[in-house]
Amino acid sequence: QEKVQQSPESLIVPEGAMVSLNCSFSDSASQSIWWYQQHPGKGPKALISIFSNGNKKEGRLTVYLNRASLHVSLHIKDSQPSDSAVYLCAVNPGYQNFYFGKGTSLTVIP
Amino acid sequence: EAAVTQSPRSKVAVTGGKVTLSCHQTNNHDYMYWYRQDTGHGLRLIHYSYVADSTEKGDIPDGYKASRPSQENFSLILELASLSQTAVYFCASSDEGQGENTQYFGPGTRLLVL
Image (cartoon, rainbow over all chains, first blue to last red; front, side, top):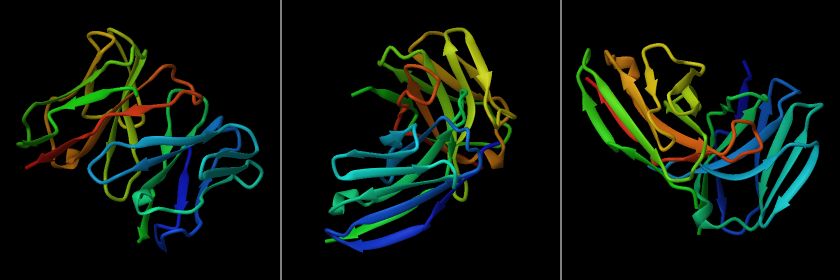
């Protein structure tokens, strides 16, 4: 069974800061990695995904995947108070399941 | 934006009672999923379905049944609710089951078993 570990557990940053979130997983053959954003009392919302080694940029978000080190990171540029939420890393091993980490709680202070 | 709705949004149930959670999607997606979310755990897959009238077990199916009567509807049934089933339950849908397809989540159902 895939194991997904996220760090840090929580993070508080000032508005405008660059935010870096980390996720490690146990299976280098995992086909895809997703980052979800979850606001209190809401369902998770997909933000960005990556399938190949390297990086992918979408707007203020950049994700880096290194399969050799079993590590993926999400970077949020110019963070905003509206970015305050829990960020979930999800790994798909290639069949009908996603394994989720426990999440990182981000607070952006105005 | 894909739409997934859940009902009820919250429920209090008694131990040993039957609970049915409902999910409806208007995305025309083939795949639907039920997850539970607990403090200290990530989201964990209970059951999923890729076609009407068929369901499959996820990682933690014990104590749960699922029903997919149509493409749009997917239910989670707790025949004998237990204290350990207190959690927030999320339904999701996706176009295909593999990782390249976005999962769209509903708002969740908060279940408290007393």
